[in-house]
Amino acid sequence: MGINAPTTVARRYTCSVASKHVREIHECESFNVTRHKYGRGFQYRLPDNTRITERHLLKRFKAMVIPPMWQDVKISACNQSKIQAFGYDQRQRKQYIYHEQWELQRQAEKFARLKAFARQLPTIRKHYVEALERPDWDITKSCALALMLLDRTGMRIGNKTYQQENGTTGLTTLRRKHLDSQGKIWFFTLPVNMARNAMWKFPIRWRHS
Image 1 (cartoon, rainbow, N blue to C red):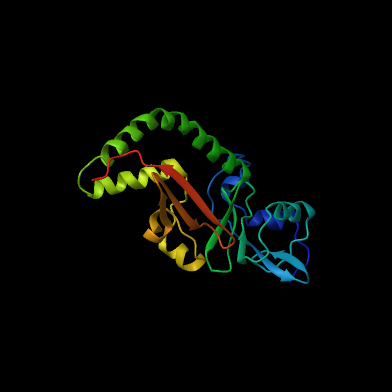
Image 2 (image 1 turned 135 degrees about the vertical axis):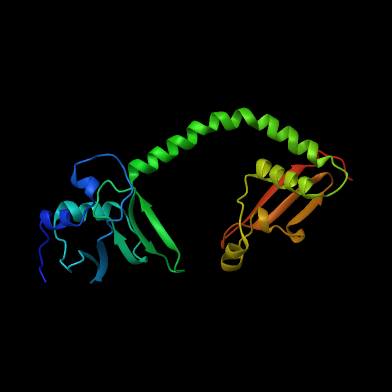
């Protein structure tokens, strides 16, 4: 197989949109570059097993900062692809690296929605406080309590799988053992990562049923 990878070879595997010199970010399936362990580093190859040696391509791959522990790494031959690369971490979870411009665009969209969300916050808080005054612990009151905790503490949502794999706890995996009180101050103490615990305190502001 060839050792050099001319620009024309790399272009052969890019998508039709990029070949038309369109500069906008788009989705494509041109994941034709694979990463292979080589000595203390890596080398990159095309589908015909041609090794990529062009400096501008290697510079682009290095700039992605793909974690060295990822396996089965595939990189888009298209410089404008929304997903630039993907691979599998040590737990065989599929992970992605997105185009920097698309990440910035997504962050801008999130921040643009914050104004509308902020305008709704007083109404949301009023509703969950009213729901916490309900006499029965029905689904509405339970959801209101979860929403209040999320609003007051900012704790992560969490899930059972992550708790089993990492020993960490989130809002949806809280248990009675995580809750304690001192007078009218209630507080949670729970593991947020393998190295430390976190504590949240808040006063009681609703009537007991």
